Image (cartoon, rainbow, N blue to C red; front, side):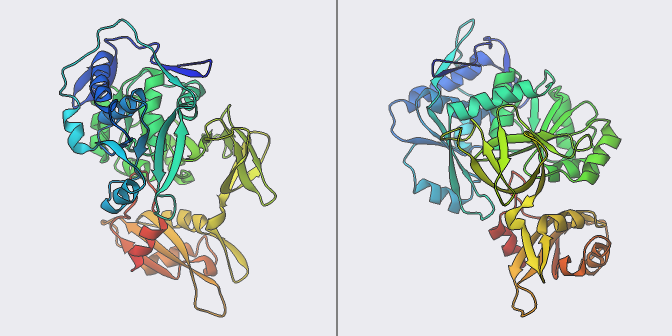
Amino acid sequence: MKTVAGNITLFANHVADSTVAFCEGENISFATFMGDVDVLTQKLLPLTGDVLISCKSRYAFSVALLASWQAGKVAILPPNKHTETLGEIGRAHKFAFVCNDVWAESCRQNNVSFSFTSIRLVFPCDQLAVRLYTSGSTGQPKAVEKTMSNLLPEAEMLKNAFAWPNTAIVASVPANHLYGLTFTVLLPWVLAVPLVDEMPLYASEVENCLEKNSSGILITVPIHLKSLMDAGISLKKVMCVTSAAPLLKDTAQTYRQQYGTDPVEIYGSSETGVIAHRLQLQDESWEAFSEVMVTSDAEGLLQVSSPFVNGQPSELFQMSDQVNLLDASRFTLEGRVDSIIKIGGKRISTLMIEQCLMRCHGVEDAAVIAVPAKSHIRDWVVWAAVAVDENVHTNSRDIKRELQKWLDGIAIPRRIITLAKLSREENGKLPKKRLMALFE
C-alpha cells in the first residue's frame, strides 16, 4: 500500500493467482476475488445511496466493502443484526444496496475472474470509506465515520508494528466492528495473506480452523480466549491478538504457562482506531503506536492525537479512560471514568470488582453495574451478573464470601445473579441496557 499525492494505492503487490481467502475449504484467488468485486461494483455504479453490509461471511463482507469503495459508495456497518437496530439505521440512510446473508450466498457464484499480472487500486485519501455504528456502553447505535486515510494507513502501520507469521488469519470476531474490520479484513490485504471466511467459536472449531488453514494468527477477545484456554485448546505456534478489554493477569499467566508465549493486547476505540499495545507479563504499561501521540488532561483522562481519527489529526480526542502517563508514549490504564463511583465516601472501581469476580471459583464471566440507591447512607449500590460453570456448584452467597479476600465490604455487590452465559455482543462487549435487562 502506498500513499502518494493525496491518493492511496491498494493491492500493488498482489498477483492474479495469489490466495486471498480460504472459504469453505476452497482457496480463492485474487483474480476470482476481483471478479466477484467487479460484478457487484457494476451493479452499484448506477444506484444512488449507501451500501449496508450485514453479512456474516467474512469473504462476502470483503467483496461488498471493496465494491462499495470502487463504486464510490459509503459502506454502512451495523453493530448487530437486530431488527430494531437495523430499522433505526435504515431510517437514517438511503441504501443503494443491502449486502446481507442472502446476498452473501450468491456472491461467489459469478464464475468471473480478472485476467491480469498485477493490479493497482487507487482511492482518494479523503474518500469516506465506512460509517460504522457502535452500540458503545448504552446500546444506542452511534455512527463513526472513517476515510480511506483513517483505515488503510492504520493497517499498514500494524503490518510494520509486529513480526506477523506469513499465514492466513483466523478470527472469532466479526468484521462489522472496527477491531474486526482492521485486523481480519484490512490487515490481511496489506500483509498479502489469506483471510479465513469462518468465524469459529467453540474450542474444537477454532483448533480445526487453525489446523486446516495452516494458520498461525488468531484474532479474538479476552472472554473468548479464556474459554478456549479452559477447554484445553493448543495455541503453542499461534500469534494471539486480543482487544475490546484488558486481559486478566491470571489469564495472561496461564497463557504463558500453557503455550510459552504472550498474547498481544491492543487498546483502542471505534473513534480513534488503535492507540497502544502491550505484552503485560513483560510490561504492564501500554506503549502507544508509532503514529499515535498520547497525553492527559487535568483530571487524568487520556487524550489522543492520531491520523486514524476522522477530522483534524492534530486535534486531541478526549477519551473516557483515566491513565497514569509514564513518559511520552507509555501509560497505565486506571479505569474508565464511568467505572469509578463513590460509595460512602470511598472510590470504587466496577472494573476492579469484575476482575475479582472472575477470580472466584466457577465464575467464567462477570459484568458489574452501579445503580442509584434508595438510601440515606449511600448514593450507589453495586449489582453483578455472573456466568457460572455448570459443572461447578456455587451460588451468590459463596461468591460474596470469596470476594471478601480482595474487596472491602462496601464494594461487594449487594445483588448477584448467576446465569449460564452473559449475552455479550459479538465484539465481547455488554451494553448497559442489555446488562440491566438481566436483572429485570
